[in-house]
Image (cartoon, rainbow, N blue to C red; front, side, top):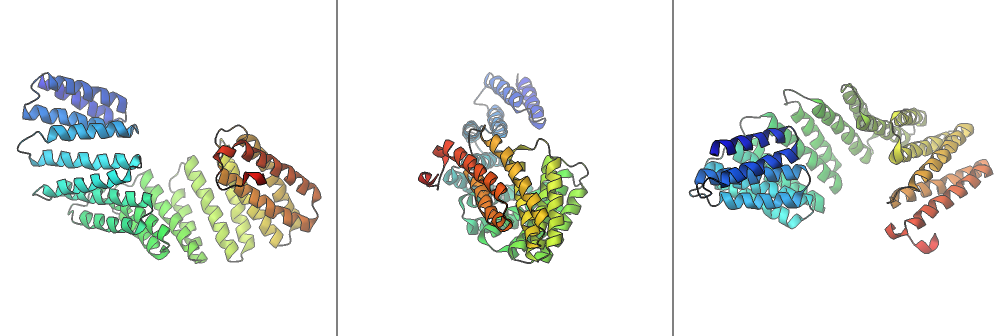
Length: 420
């Protein structure tokens, strides 16, 4: 009977590795029922029952059913804690249950409970006499998870502190396996986010450099890793832009594009990333007064966005912004016909955008506000060209957009509806 329970448990594990989480849960349940038919007071049987709860919690977490996952982790611990004396493996499992419970609480935005769980996980790992790979990884992960909670709550200095502690524990691991390298990369990237929010962009840049260096230690880089390297160049470029070091920013954007090009097949997300790089590079050239170079970048941005199917609302917003910027640069270069051509396209795309948002349930108010602000600025430039017909079209668009805002007025924050 015990052998049958173990078979069911292992089958659940196979389904879990195949990302078939509902099937995995069903087999963990079957395994538990089988274990309970034997002798639920037997130490080995208790471990089997507890293991089914722990793994079932992990499966529910993958399905984003975090409340259920938390209950599973609690029930797993209850079973493990009945075992006397507790050996190393049991203590590790109790720590793992605390760790994963903390992650689930963070997903539910229950941050106080999340931090408490990570603290309990560390305490449990540190109770284990032999500090080996698994315990050091566990303590490092618990510090990293706590840092993520602080990032979520805006306590960025505390987040940085936690990430530093996580790195110290990872560095104690002699065998630098791929699993460790992946964790270290995440810590550097999350720490870069913290420094960005703090406004310390030099430290942010250093984190991206360290993340790339860590990526290089991974023996078999896959698509995800290559994509990660490209992202570090992109974000490093953005950090240099914030420091107004535009030549360095442009260099980073070029390196990012080269990295993305090495990926080969480019999916929707990658195409959007590359388009975003061209757009950011265009802004950098604009800041340097290199308007012609900026226009070239904006054209490449728009070309990529137009290749992405289906287009959707977000893509339209990006295209509108790029055309606004390109038209403004033609305006600065006294290229009237080109500027007007860009702005005519802006109007056409906003018409398309207005039709789309008329059919959606929840409107992103800030998105519409930004378009209205851009249209307001555009009117002033069109007056300079005496383009009264276009101004009339813009007036109609503004009325239509304001109408959509009124329709969604229950969702509007920070707008005086009496002015609409």
